[in-house]
Length: 112
Length: 234
Image (cartoon, rainbow over all chains, first blue to last red; front, side, top):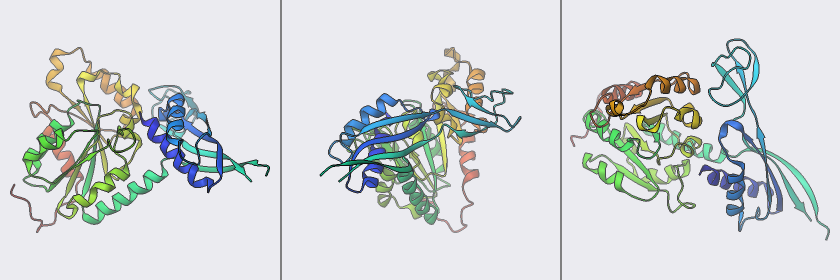
């Protein structure tokens, strides 16, 4: 379950960025192509956050759809499932422009 | 005192920390002149058996080393010990709940135990898993994915990240094709759909088929050896 390792990395990023403040929410962007199961990520996050400044924070997962730019016809289209195919011409030679994100977008922190 | 909530934009890639360590590992490998292959597959696809065949062929001409990743056991390292090449075992169990992959930090922790200056080709046998190892760079030069024909044709579609990040796909256990309903053409079509550029080699660790081609692929990628490079007689 790679969600646990990813959750651990998220907690570390958030803990470092919080600089001692209490974290109440962590908003992450997860690309569709990452094969991350949001519920598994949330479960792992709750576990690994224990005993850290991130303990008790809410994990908000924003899923980013996969988008590809077709090298054959130049169209940009949303990609659904595999094989990844251009929505216009059906071509397979694509440059992925979105959908591979694994990003801590923002934190919600408590300030005194 | 009243506490106010503030929003702090971070925009930090979750895997940045791992990738930074992977780059540091890579620098260390480059400095030592060690070419590194990350071998990944599902459990039981035949990674260790293929490595045995590769060591049989290459250890006479190339200084090889093995970094063996396993959740708990040292069985694979014991199997490879007879080749008398440097082997270091990394058990992921002491990590958080037994990690299902090697990450850059685990590899880094094992490096002091490997005589990198005396290793031309380091083969990292990752933990058997089709999902997690694909996410974590460890500082490798290339990724070899071992797929076995007993796993079913649809695996590239089910585990695309693994197949998409592979530089070479070994289609292993082809000696079993006569006994299976496996449709090789269909599999290769799916592989091409998720990774149009990855070459593949049909192999059987059992019969040795395709192992020569795999060794040639490895040798072609390695920088030419210095003329005075000593090769172990073991």
